[in-house]
Amino acid sequence: MIVIMEMINMMLRAMLDFFFDFTQSYGWAVILLSLAVTVVTLPLNIKQMQFTRAMRRVQPELDAIKKKFKDDKTKVNEATVELWAKHKVNPASGCLPMIIQMPVLWAMFNVLQVPGIFDKQPLFLGLNMTIPNPENAIMTLGWYYWILPILTVGTTFWQSKQTMQSTEPSQRTMLYMMPLFMGWFTLQFPTALALYWVSRNLFTIGQEYLYTVFTSRQVVEVEAETNAKRRKDG
Image (tube, rainbow, N blue to C red; front, side, top):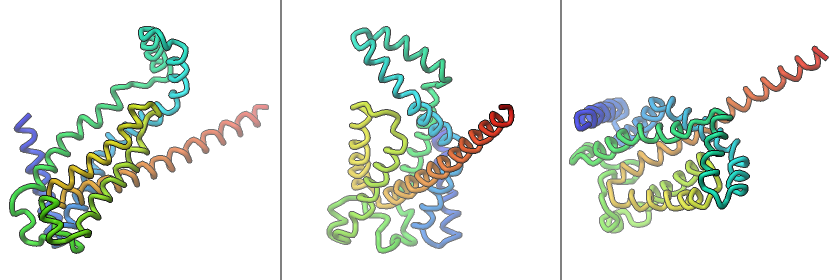
């Protein structure tokens, strides 16, 4: 596992250096790197989006099962498994993409913390990519430093809301707690990490929007063909 992580670290560092050579800006290099990671993980993201959509479709039936067997957890579990089998929903497919992407996120965290990585050009749009903590930031940038942490909270909330699979209390709690945690997290580390996270969120949100538009058109086309065939047969 350590060897794999080292390989991912080296690959991401090489990509970051390549994008810097291309743009002569570590800020843009971080953004392009987040775009590259988003493109590479597209198949996993599609699996996640398919699972989320499937869960939303079966959610009313899941709620009905929980209401019907509210005093019998065994019955709830059995009926839920039957429902998943009926709709061909695999619960593991929702977790697997996130698990696979964790090493990439951890490697990115390590790469962006390498000492001296931003010495050539520490500033990007007035933001110092190397500032490691709020105290330093307040002395050097003041309110300007809080732009990226605020964007981190906002984009994480937006992205989480798009992928929320149900309206259960635990899911709603995570919807609000995760963005706040990420906002706090980015305050503790170099600003480059917040820039990466915001960029990644925005690219993922765009990806999910395009997926929704594309699949919605497919559904409309299939329904139109089906209706046309019925009219012809009738």
